[in-house]
Image (cartoon, rainbow, N blue to C red; front, side, top):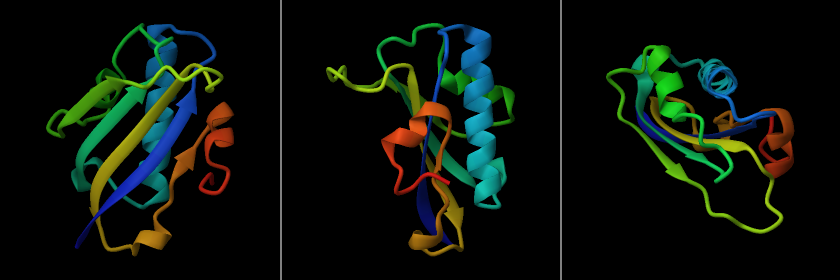
Length: 120
């Protein structure tokens, strides 16, 4: 079994806790499903948010999904002028058999524009 990193991102329409949780859970679920994984396959998850997201931690949404025993961390993304606003990014470390070039990275909503080469 190899350790693989899965990238993902989504955007919010409004900075509200419920919306942040819904979009984060949608993204995490898509990352798991797209790679045929469960939370038991996840080693750790690192979340970042653009500075305009302050309503809650995305990790709180992941804990609600059963990630209570998975190490989770949140940080603020760099404030780069002209960057896409209201973005939650994820780097999920997992154990899986897939080769690196078969890992399904997931970009949802406006975040598709961040990595068209990786977006599903």
